[in-house]
Length: 278
Ligand code: HEM
Image 1 (tube, rainbow, N blue to C red):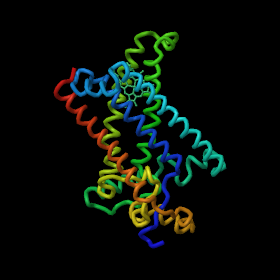
Image 2 (cartoon, rainbow, N blue to C red; image 1 turned 90 degrees about the vertical axis):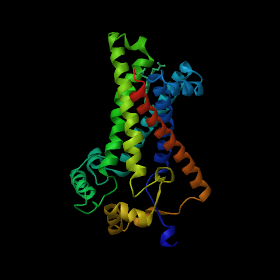
Image 3 (cartoon, rainbow, N blue to C red; image 1 turned 30 degrees about the vertical axis):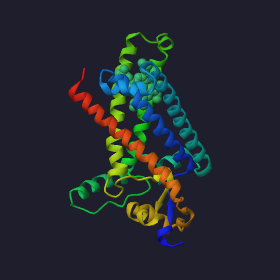
């Protein structure tokens, strides 16, 4: 295999599959949710027709919410499985080298990145997970807690008002709606920029679908992880071949579709907020 044909496996098949379902469910939740939130805009009317009317859009919303919750639970089960297989204790997993928790190096990388952005230093030697990837990862936990719990109260109001006063549903609607706006705004701008639009990845990175990064790119993008794998003599364990072009084309079409829908939602939100907000 020549160096150009060598790829490094970055994501497991399960994680890639979960991300695809996360994308599909999040797009449906955003499209149907925003068409309810901005129901007075022309776009909302067109979109809701696509989902079979406003009432039906509500059912699509609940259906996608169930998919998202299943994805979230499947991930938690996978974390427990990985812990049992590869780590002696939870502490070892949580403070280990490739942990998703923030550590001193993230703070260091963050400060060095700021210097690098303004040309006052070198690009930091990023490792397995960068500080912005960890932030994105935990945003999902926070989002699931806030959006998921409030969403459930909107779905089952009779049940929840056995325990809480009715005005809590009004508060839950406001929290759900505003947190949804924040999540949508964040994912389709900052997350898209960090993963696809930054110069090293522009215009799109399909690694989350293929799971593979070219070895040359891996060396430049994750120098610390590369060095560690070489020192431990473990790099070969992760070397794989790329998928055939037809499979990659399918991944690109899916990726472009998701990016286009995301950017369109952002334009729609900005339009609704500036020109027709009620
Ligand atoms: C994951 C669990 C979720 C559940 C259980 C859930 C549930 C619900 C329910 C039951 C409604 C009321 C729908 C209706 O009136 O027919 C609603 C509204 C809404 N949802 Fe969700 N949802 C979830 C996630 C999300 C996500 C991820 C987003 C967007 C990123 C979102 C955005 C919205 C918006 C914007 C509304 C309209 C709120 C308003 O009237 O201002 N939801 N949700």
